[in-house]
Image (tube, rainbow, N blue to C red; front, side):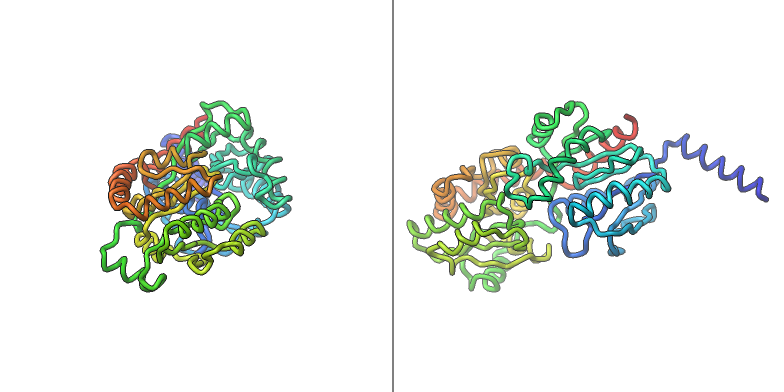
Length: 396
């Protein structure tokens, strides 16, 4: 009987090699119920598709806390919990340089995939990393001291170690090449997408949302973490300029958690002439987020640094005009389907607010262009490109 099982095991190993089946370990520590943000959504949307579309391969999802069963998308996934929760530079190092290498040594996967920019330098398993942006290299002062020090020390080492790198825009690819002297042949651009829940609303649906949030009044909307690089300081100043020169009942809705709220942002808000016209909703669940975005007069996404800018595509899908920045990846994503502004000039932003508010013809033209532009970006395309990159990483 023992001989039978040994022979069966050998046959299974041979079949696996013959069919090139893979075991892939994935860092899924940012898959957290009701707390998905940019990288979390990227991880969720791509892995959901990749795992279900490739049932012949096996995936180990590595969490640093109790996980939601909803993240185990298919039968070819084995969840693994490895403590401690990696949410501080000391714990980053502990998790990635001690916990993960030991686990990978036991699992012996064909690849370790990490979608959040971190890798394990001590592990000898082939690895692939996704860098979403290198904002910490350009604006280190926007990030807490120890966090930015960790990023700036280890990210170049991760770039060198990785068998393959994926990133979400051509801008970010070129930035990685410049900053870390990585060969262009090693980097794949996979772009981001937007969920199917983002779609145009009916006039009645829009009215109901506006009644619930702004007493029926029109509003511009910002979506994202309230981080310095999201440029709320100049958005507040621009909104004041707009209101001074265009007396109206238009509101500004700010959607996002105040995790990165700084003294500069607080100061700019307190100096506003029209602070009562700014509405803070906090973090919203995606079904509600899609409604408030779909009911907005325009999206105001005027960051001074982005690796992609997912809300731009979400607005396109909702038939909502977009105001965004002329810098980093945003023109690449928006194309001709947005009003592009200088994010360092409140006057430039205010002028775009005026155009989007005053001229229906401009709004309609932007909506039509957005409908065409959105076809370039979908999570299915992202997943397909990421899978191609994974295959290249395993072969390299």
